[in-house]
Amino acid sequence: MSLMTVHGVKVPLRPDDVSPVIWQALDNETYEAKEAKWISKAVKPGDRVLELGSGIGIITSLIAQIPDVQVWAFEANPASVALAKRVVGANDLDNVVLLKGILAAGPPRPFTFYLRKDLWMSSMDKDQGPYEGEMTIVSTDADDFIVQHGANVLVMDIEGAERELLQHAKLPGIERVYLELHDHLYGLEGIRDITQALALKGYAYDPRGSRGPCVLFAKDDGPREYEEVEPDAA
Image (cartoon, rainbow, N blue to C red; front, side, top):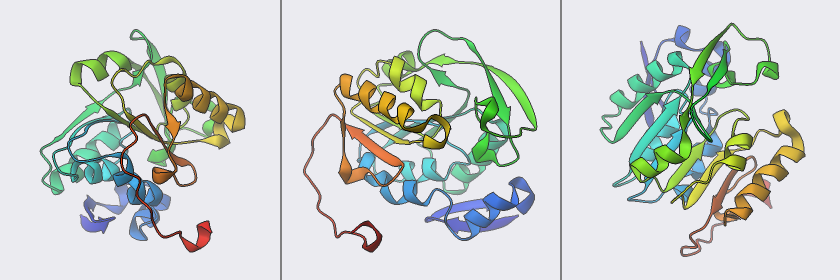
């Protein structure tokens, strides 16, 4: 077992726990680097965060390290859930509830989830690439979960499923939505669907917490934070 530190998070893994591609990304800290750098712009102290697509728990752990935050993290891939529990435990975080499953808009219904060697490529999209197995998962209603747990921030990286969810869920009480866009799966048409759906719900694109495909949409307009422009962003 190796104990590496990725974005300040302790990650106890063996090389055979993940694919060589993911292991290399962890080793050189390119794994979810943009999300790690900007998540603090989306999540504030005291927030109640619903995370969809927790992966192996690195972003989950970063969120949970923000003061007075409570996190409910969903992940569909059982292998990822097991690794995420190990990561959360290694960082002594007692404010995270890790749940195996899928949240979707509307009443529970079955989804086919496709398992891939690169854990971050596992998804509900059969055409995303070769897969090693598949499983059926019955969804939980996203809006019901949000209301029952009083979540006010939604964080998601769910390999394209964000398009349908954000179009059809009402997101009651959610002030900020932070997500990774997957334009390679649904093109600019899908991004248009997402931005229009969020605009109709009262969210605005917030450049203070957005970089490339990792974007923040917000309803609450807190104090604006000015930052030095990165060289590659000038």
